[in-house]
Length: 313
Image 1 (cartoon, rainbow, N blue to C red):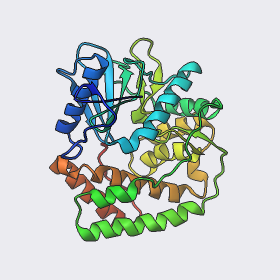
Image 2 (cartoon, helix red, strand yellow; image 1 turned 120 degrees about the vertical axis):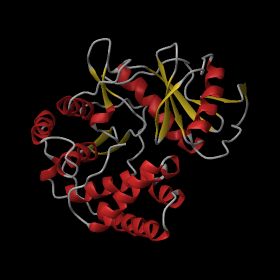
Image 3 (tube, rainbow, N blue to C red; image 1 turned 60 degrees about the vertical axis):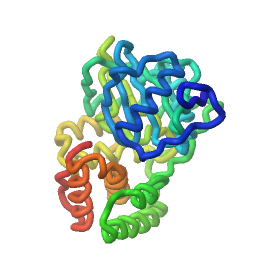
Image 4 (cartoon, one colour; image 1 turned 30 degrees about the vertical axis):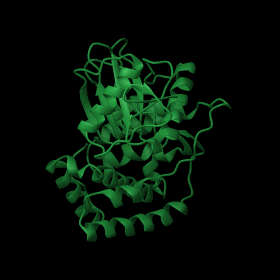
């Protein structure tokens, strides 16, 4: 790990006043790139969510910027996981650029990755199932100690910091408390082990060099119930209609287990929905579109069970 600020080595980051925004993330990128001998000029912001994702210009690299140094343990695990998956020849995104990663810059954590493809082409639901089945069969080396899965780790903080009406904030906190209890009572059908943590169709991209679908976004890796990696595809089909019945059938066939037949599916689905709301709520200041989507999602949670017309972000 290397710590830099304003392009110079130092003992600690300088801090990032003004919150996590496209402007502040670009400042962090400039500092980190300077330390790594890279040019941040003309970098393209691909996504601002849990991380800021930038495509560098002139070199086939992508930079991921975590919000604060609180994320450092997670990012160090992500780096270790990436090296493990590469050694196992597992189809996943590879670290690239500076050898010493992660880089702590501007009181944030930055990693550099290969550009999987110039133009993003997502893999199929069936390919996701096969990747998950293969991933769940891997045994991590003894040197890699994965953290235990903590589904609710950042939810309360996100709810507290979000720009929400106080009655909405209280509603989400009550729902969080209820689901925490329900989750603790679950009896899982599958054995625990390494999980990706955010396994969905948006996190497999077809590699331009050979057409192979590879797993990306490795920062949520943990040890936990395998159902956690299956529930998103199920609810995207059952709750949101983002996948067809045929696609979901291919997913079940490819993995070999239908999480929707497990009695705990509803609880895990509801947990995931709450996480989706809390995750997006932290970015309500970025645009009116995001603020409107968060309001719609909270209204749907209040209404209870039913189809969700949520827009993907």
